[in-house]
Amino acid sequence: MPATIHEAFAYLRVRDAAQAIAFYVQAFGATERFRLTEPGGRVGHAELQLGPAVLMLSDEYPELEIRGPQSLGGTSFAMHLHVDDADGLVQRAVAAGATLLRAPEDHFYGERSGTVRDPFGHEWLIGHSIEEVTPDEMQRRYDKLFTA
View 1 (cartoon, one colour):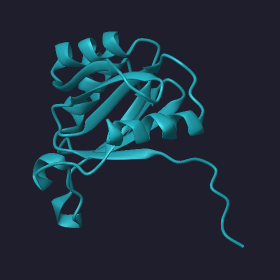
View 2: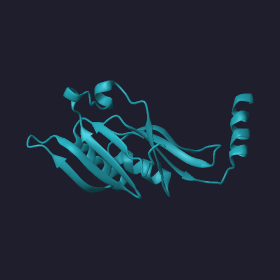
View 3: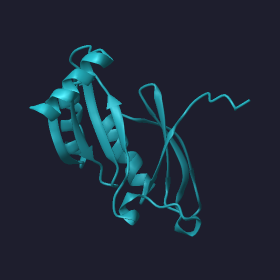
C-alpha cells in the first residue's frame, strides 16, 4: 500500500536566502516562521507562511548539487498564488524588485492573472478568480483559441 501524503510544500533554492526572505516578506506579505543559519551566515532551511501555505527555502549548496535558478540559468516551474487582487499584488511585487513578465489580464479559464520573476529567478503566477468556469466550458474555450 502506498504511503499517504499529508502535505506538499514548495521548496525553493536561492542564491542569498536572507535577501530572498526579505523580498518575499515585502512583495507577498509572507511571515517568517523560522530559519536555521550556519555560523558563516548560509541559510540551511527557512519556512515562510504565505496565507495558508508554507514555503520552504534554503541557500544554494553547490557541494550537494543544490542550486537555484540563477546558477542553473533559469527555472522550469512557476509558483501560483491565488489572491484577492492580482493587479495589486503584481504591482507590489514589482515595486519590491520583481520583473514583470506578463501584466495581469483576463483569461478564458476564469482568472485574471499576471506573471513576475523574483530577483532570485523564480516565476510567480499571481491571479484571482473572475468567474466560475466548468472544465467542459474551459475545454470549449481552449479549443476555440486554436480554431480562431
